[in-house]
Length: 535
Image (tube, rainbow, N blue to C red):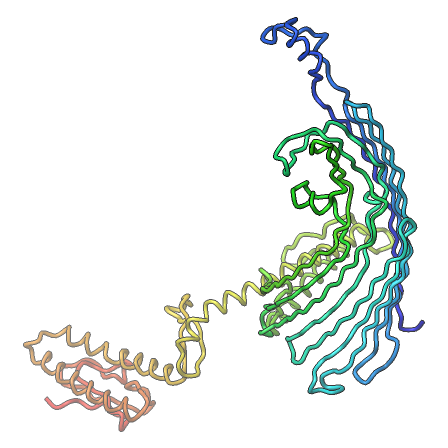
């Protein structure tokens, strides 16, 4: 039996029901007294005439037990795959005991029914073709057969035979064709309930259009025979997309049931014509007896077409998101730090960075921690690991959200980083490239050279000779800086160790001595001297 699987299941039930139904007040004696004029119906009624009817009582006990053994496996190796085989053997027993008393008539009914069933079923699934293995052009094609036989102790033998075809020509498309012929038995109640006759039951006769009182017969019908049901089914199932769980399906079902077992329907004119033996009339044509026990109908046909779609999508991710390598590294560092703190706390050493000692009782005399402390430490470690992982993911998500607008604006390859202002990092992200960095450095150098001339010009009156000389010096310096910024990198006057500046009459010390230009000097980038502009 290597490679085969077997399953044994069993079940037992016991159900007990008990009911008590009140039926109201008995009005027969009261109505007779009113008709005789002995009492006034609009005054207080005498208590000896107001009598309650006896209640209806019922009790039932149902017991059942079943056991089933399933054996399945792969029997034979075929070119398209292995043939699957399943065999099921089972037994079932049911028993029903019921007692009832009708309060008005005092009628008592008893029922003691039992049914034992033994069954055996076999299923065979045979693969004929398979994609990529045998007859690839046909696709996946398989057939299945099933047969069952059941023996009922109170009825007889029932059989079921069926088969089907399963074809998948391409991925995500499947066709199913099946046929089943099965026998069905009536229930224990339909077959063995006691026959109960009730008189003076009011029924509307749809043939004569009158309401009459009849004798009603109900209970089980031992003359019922098994019904036979034949079902043909054709179905198609298509999944158009791999990424979405969307399935389109259509099914056509046709069934025919012969000798259908059913409860007796309402006594319409058509039903009375179809079952004349169930309706007995007297000589005057008045309906007298109605038999409503279960009956076999000759045949029932039905056809059904169903089509639609099934779509499913999870509302949230069932898996935790995977950590990036950077997040994994940070998580490992935090976990290692926590483990070190926990171990130091268990050994009685102070935790680093002023951390709290580990929770739980102190370690035992043998040196190892007690079991409650170990459990608490493991739980604390797991909680800290979860918190660390959550913090790493939160930091990475915040950085991605802040960097996303900058990355979308960068037309050339660059690096997104925060802008710095006055030595502090701002919250704004900027796209930095090598060209942009050089341009910003040149602009800063140009602004630093232009500030002294602006201050010098502002310090001398515009009409004085020094003011006019300063304006000319500023203009020449601006022209020289513009030319030099286009041909060479920006430079600062006096940056060379050998540079010297000449001083105009009446001006202060030169730029070489003070580290900057005087109001009447300019910087020549072609040499290492400061030239005085012509007056």
